[in-house]
Image (cartoon, rainbow, N blue to C red; front, top):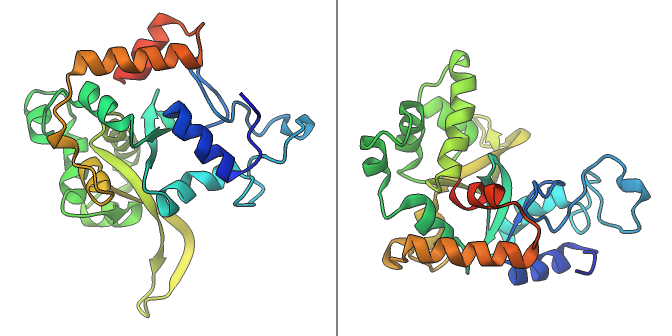
Length: 233
Protein backbone atom coordinates (compact mmCIF):
# COMPACT_ATOMS: atom_id res chain seq x y z
CA UNK A 1 0.00 0.00 0.00
CA UNK A 2 1.26 3.48 -0.91
CA UNK A 3 2.44 5.46 2.11
CA UNK A 4 -0.18 7.99 3.16
CA UNK A 5 0.74 11.64 2.68
CA UNK A 6 -2.22 13.56 4.15
CA UNK A 7 -5.67 13.40 5.74
CA UNK A 8 -7.55 13.02 2.45
CA UNK A 9 -5.42 10.04 1.46
CA UNK A 10 -5.94 8.52 4.89
CA UNK A 11 -9.73 8.70 4.54
CA UNK A 12 -9.60 7.21 1.04
CA UNK A 13 -7.38 4.35 2.18
CA UNK A 14 -9.54 3.72 5.26
CA UNK A 15 -12.64 3.45 3.08
CA UNK A 16 -10.88 0.72 1.11
CA UNK A 17 -9.60 -1.15 4.18
CA UNK A 18 -12.66 -0.77 6.39
CA UNK A 19 -10.83 -0.55 9.71
CA UNK A 20 -7.44 0.26 11.22
CA UNK A 21 -5.68 0.55 14.54
CA UNK A 22 -5.59 4.20 15.52
CA UNK A 23 -2.14 4.61 17.05
CA UNK A 24 1.28 4.07 15.56
CA UNK A 25 1.24 0.32 16.25
CA UNK A 26 -0.57 -2.29 14.19
CA UNK A 27 -0.84 -4.65 17.22
CA UNK A 28 -0.18 -7.55 14.89
CA UNK A 29 -3.29 -6.75 12.85
CA UNK A 30 -3.20 -3.61 10.69
CA UNK A 31 -2.59 0.13 10.90
CA UNK A 32 -2.70 2.66 8.09
CA UNK A 33 -0.08 4.69 9.97
CA UNK A 34 2.10 1.87 11.40
CA UNK A 35 4.71 4.02 13.13
CA UNK A 36 4.65 6.12 16.26
CA UNK A 37 6.34 9.28 17.46
CA UNK A 38 9.74 7.69 18.09
CA UNK A 39 12.01 7.64 15.05
CA UNK A 40 9.47 9.14 12.68
CA UNK A 41 11.81 11.96 11.61
CA UNK A 42 13.78 9.43 9.62
CA UNK A 43 10.75 8.53 7.51
CA UNK A 44 10.34 10.02 4.05
CA UNK A 45 6.77 11.26 4.56
CA UNK A 46 5.16 14.51 5.74
CA UNK A 47 2.83 12.48 7.99
CA UNK A 48 4.22 12.84 11.50
CA UNK A 49 2.66 12.62 14.94
CA UNK A 50 2.01 15.56 17.26
CA UNK A 51 3.00 18.41 14.97
CA UNK A 52 -0.45 20.01 15.24
CA UNK A 53 -0.80 20.18 11.45
CA UNK A 54 -4.36 18.99 10.67
CA UNK A 55 -3.36 17.75 7.22
CA UNK A 56 -0.38 15.62 8.22
CA UNK A 57 -0.69 14.86 11.95
CA UNK A 58 -2.53 11.56 12.61
CA UNK A 59 -3.31 12.73 16.15
CA UNK A 60 -5.48 15.48 14.64
CA UNK A 61 -7.20 13.06 12.26
CA UNK A 62 -8.99 11.18 15.03
CA UNK A 63 -11.17 14.23 15.72
CA UNK A 64 -11.38 15.38 12.12
CA UNK A 65 -13.09 12.16 11.07
CA UNK A 66 -15.72 12.66 13.77
CA UNK A 67 -16.29 16.33 13.03
CA UNK A 68 -16.02 16.32 9.24
CA UNK A 69 -16.98 12.84 8.05
CA UNK A 70 -20.24 10.90 8.17
CA UNK A 71 -18.77 7.46 7.48
CA UNK A 72 -16.05 6.85 10.09
CA UNK A 73 -16.16 6.00 13.79
CA UNK A 74 -13.18 6.32 16.13
CA UNK A 75 -12.88 5.05 19.70
CA UNK A 76 -10.97 2.64 21.92
CA UNK A 77 -12.48 -0.38 20.20
CA UNK A 78 -9.52 -2.71 19.54
CA UNK A 79 -7.30 -4.27 22.25
CA UNK A 80 -8.48 -1.48 24.61
CA UNK A 81 -6.70 0.92 22.25
CA UNK A 82 -7.87 3.35 19.62
CA UNK A 83 -9.14 2.32 16.22
CA UNK A 84 -11.17 3.39 13.21
CA UNK A 85 -14.15 1.55 11.70
CA UNK A 86 -16.00 2.70 8.58
CA UNK A 87 -19.74 2.79 8.08
CA UNK A 88 -19.57 -0.30 5.85
CA UNK A 89 -17.87 -2.46 8.48
CA UNK A 90 -19.29 -1.11 11.74
CA UNK A 91 -22.52 -3.17 11.55
CA UNK A 92 -20.44 -6.36 11.39
CA UNK A 93 -18.43 -5.48 14.50
CA UNK A 94 -21.68 -4.43 16.18
CA UNK A 95 -23.26 -7.80 15.39
CA UNK A 96 -20.27 -9.68 16.81
CA UNK A 97 -19.70 -7.60 19.93
CA UNK A 98 -23.34 -7.02 20.87
CA UNK A 99 -24.89 -10.35 19.85
CA UNK A 100 -28.26 -8.64 19.46
CA UNK A 101 -28.36 -7.53 23.10
CA UNK A 102 -29.36 -4.14 24.46
CA UNK A 103 -27.18 -2.58 27.13
CA UNK A 104 -29.67 -3.52 29.85
CA UNK A 105 -29.72 -7.15 28.71
CA UNK A 106 -25.93 -7.32 28.71
CA UNK A 107 -25.84 -5.81 32.20
CA UNK A 108 -28.43 -8.22 33.58
CA UNK A 109 -26.42 -11.12 32.15
CA UNK A 110 -23.35 -9.89 34.03
CA UNK A 111 -21.37 -8.93 30.95
CA UNK A 112 -21.11 -5.27 31.92
CA UNK A 113 -19.71 -3.85 35.16
CA UNK A 114 -21.68 -1.71 37.59
CA UNK A 115 -19.32 1.22 37.01
CA UNK A 116 -19.95 0.95 33.28
CA UNK A 117 -23.69 1.05 33.93
CA UNK A 118 -23.31 4.23 35.98
CA UNK A 119 -21.52 5.87 33.06
CA UNK A 120 -23.91 4.54 30.42
CA UNK A 121 -26.96 5.73 32.36
CA UNK A 122 -25.57 9.27 32.26
CA UNK A 123 -24.69 9.26 28.54
CA UNK A 124 -27.78 7.39 27.36
CA UNK A 125 -29.93 10.55 27.36
CA UNK A 126 -27.64 12.33 24.88
CA UNK A 127 -24.04 13.07 23.94
CA UNK A 128 -21.94 14.39 26.80
CA UNK A 129 -18.37 15.57 27.34
CA UNK A 130 -16.06 13.62 29.62
CA UNK A 131 -15.99 16.26 32.33
CA UNK A 132 -19.79 16.52 32.20
CA UNK A 133 -20.17 12.75 32.61
CA UNK A 134 -18.03 12.83 35.75
CA UNK A 135 -19.99 15.74 37.17
CA UNK A 136 -23.48 14.45 36.28
CA UNK A 137 -22.71 10.94 37.51
CA UNK A 138 -21.18 12.08 40.78
CA UNK A 139 -17.86 10.36 40.13
CA UNK A 140 -15.12 11.18 42.62
CA UNK A 141 -11.34 11.19 42.35
CA UNK A 142 -11.35 7.84 44.11
CA UNK A 143 -13.41 6.47 41.20
CA UNK A 144 -10.82 7.59 38.65
CA UNK A 145 -9.18 4.24 37.87
CA UNK A 146 -12.41 2.26 37.79
CA UNK A 147 -14.06 5.03 35.76
CA UNK A 148 -11.34 4.95 33.10
CA UNK A 149 -11.49 1.17 32.83
CA UNK A 150 -15.28 1.19 32.56
CA UNK A 151 -15.24 3.84 29.86
CA UNK A 152 -12.89 1.65 27.80
CA UNK A 153 -15.12 -1.35 28.55
CA UNK A 154 -18.11 0.51 27.11
CA UNK A 155 -16.19 1.43 23.96
CA UNK A 156 -14.87 -2.11 23.49
CA UNK A 157 -18.40 -3.47 23.84
CA UNK A 158 -19.64 -0.97 21.25
CA UNK A 159 -22.04 0.62 23.70
CA UNK A 160 -20.47 4.10 23.69
CA UNK A 161 -18.25 5.85 21.17
CA UNK A 162 -16.49 9.18 20.79
CA UNK A 163 -18.31 11.78 18.74
CA UNK A 164 -16.22 14.94 19.02
CA UNK A 165 -14.62 17.35 21.46
CA UNK A 166 -15.52 20.50 23.33
CA UNK A 167 -14.13 22.89 25.92
CA UNK A 168 -15.35 23.51 29.43
CA UNK A 169 -17.48 26.66 29.73
CA UNK A 170 -17.36 29.39 32.34
CA UNK A 171 -20.40 31.23 33.67
CA UNK A 172 -20.28 33.58 30.70
CA UNK A 173 -20.42 30.63 28.31
CA UNK A 174 -16.84 31.13 27.18
CA UNK A 175 -14.66 28.13 26.43
CA UNK A 176 -11.45 27.56 28.38
CA UNK A 177 -8.77 24.94 28.97
CA UNK A 178 -8.03 21.73 27.12
CA UNK A 179 -10.59 20.07 24.89
CA UNK A 180 -12.71 17.37 26.47
CA UNK A 181 -13.77 14.29 24.48
CA UNK A 182 -17.51 13.93 23.87
CA UNK A 183 -19.22 10.53 24.04
CA UNK A 184 -22.55 9.16 22.85
CA UNK A 185 -24.20 5.78 22.36
CA UNK A 186 -23.14 3.97 19.19
CA UNK A 187 -26.78 3.80 18.11
CA UNK A 188 -27.18 7.56 18.36
CA UNK A 189 -23.83 8.19 16.66
CA UNK A 190 -24.84 6.24 13.57
CA UNK A 191 -28.51 7.25 13.59
CA UNK A 192 -27.38 10.87 13.27
CA UNK A 193 -25.49 9.69 10.18
CA UNK A 194 -28.46 7.88 8.67
CA UNK A 195 -27.71 4.33 9.80
CA UNK A 196 -29.95 2.33 12.16
CA UNK A 197 -27.76 -0.44 13.55
CA UNK A 198 -30.52 -2.30 15.39
CA UNK A 199 -32.56 -2.70 12.21
CA UNK A 200 -29.80 -4.54 10.33
CA UNK A 201 -30.01 -7.83 12.27
CA UNK A 202 -26.80 -9.36 10.89
CA UNK A 203 -25.72 -12.89 11.78
CA UNK A 204 -22.77 -12.69 14.23
CA UNK A 205 -21.09 -15.81 12.83
CA UNK A 206 -21.25 -14.54 9.26
CA UNK A 207 -20.00 -11.11 10.34
CA UNK A 208 -17.12 -12.71 12.25
CA UNK A 209 -16.02 -14.62 9.17
CA UNK A 210 -16.33 -11.57 6.94
CA UNK A 211 -14.14 -9.50 9.25
CA UNK A 212 -11.64 -12.33 9.57
CA UNK A 213 -11.26 -12.58 5.81
CA UNK A 214 -10.71 -8.83 5.54
CA UNK A 215 -8.07 -8.89 8.29
CA UNK A 216 -6.20 -11.67 6.50
CA UNK A 217 -6.45 -9.74 3.25
CA UNK A 218 -4.79 -6.77 4.96
CA UNK A 219 -2.32 -8.88 6.96
CA UNK A 220 -2.04 -12.48 5.68
CA UNK A 221 0.40 -13.45 8.45
CA UNK A 222 -1.81 -12.26 11.32
CA UNK A 223 -1.93 -14.74 14.20
CA UNK A 224 -5.24 -16.55 14.66
CA UNK A 225 -5.40 -15.70 18.38
CA UNK A 226 -4.87 -11.99 17.76
CA UNK A 227 -7.40 -11.95 14.93
CA UNK A 228 -10.04 -13.48 17.21
CA UNK A 229 -9.34 -10.94 19.95
CA UNK A 230 -9.38 -8.10 17.43
CA UNK A 231 -12.80 -9.15 16.15
CA UNK A 232 -14.52 -10.11 19.38
CA UNK A 233 -12.94 -7.61 21.76
